[in-house]
Length: 138
Image (cartoon, rainbow, N blue to C red; front, side):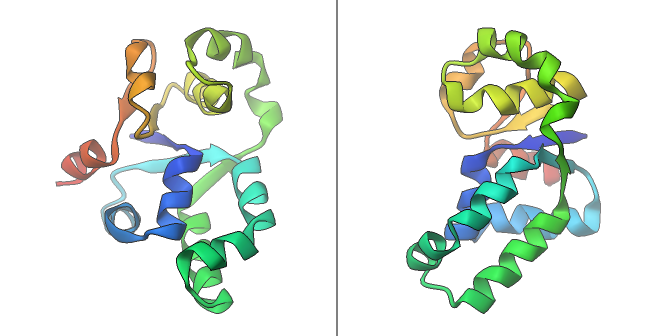
């Protein structure tokens, strides 16, 4: 099953670890999900490494290790490969920050992993919360 990982989920893994990180660990063995994200997600996250170090209280080496692991578990898709879906995504999105992830989900016919309850108000894309992803892995 293809799952688009949104920014909040990605940053949650880096900052908190916990259940969100565990999903990536378990999926590495089970291969139940193919995680994908827009490539700019990782580019933007790398720009904020100093802020992430402050929030996580991890050393740069520890954070880079977690970052590298998660980055390997997510297939990154160039923006150019799904730009034609932006008009449709804008119509579905309650927040301009979510348009890119919705556009990618539309292009790939995948579900979106997000804890934003507002996204569930539309019915064209399946939205899974972290808890729902955990249940699917069980």
